[in-house]
Image 1 (cartoon, one colour):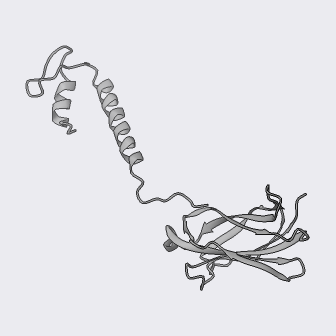
Image 2 (cartoon, one colour; image 1 turned 90 degrees about the vertical axis):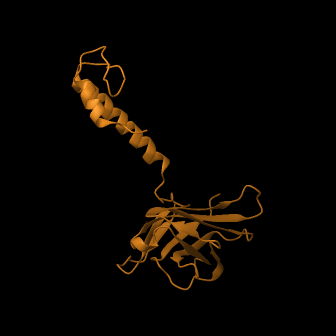
Image 3 (cartoon, one colour; image 1 turned 45 degrees about the vertical axis):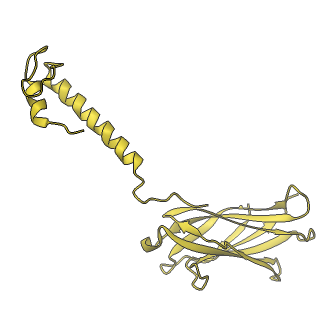
Length: 189
């Protein structure tokens, strides 16, 4: 809808219940301040509706209580990760125990925002014996910041404490792009 500003300005100065010859519209108020405020509010509302319907290419972020060791993030880390939560507990089916780690991330390299990345979780016994390495196979789209979930299950019910190393990589899993987050997590009963 086009707005004829010249017509509006003429209308604002005329007495109530008159019509402008060019606009052929009735005049609703003699108070120009009220009319200007009304027009301004209408424009603001229409602009806010228009901007809410656009996402401007922004993608919302993608997707445990334990001892945490975090190698010192450096300026070389393109993404910084820290522990949100870690939980090692029996699954509801009772056949296995699951380690679930949530990490908070912050993207330090703006060129990585809205690009796909992968993550790896290496799990070992507390003495360092490797148990399992798992990764996010399809990857995820990195935002400016967010939370990423890592999870894996173990059928060996004798495992009571696990150590995990979590880090992010490029989509080929060839380049590490974050610091390594290390957690020691005990089995909940």
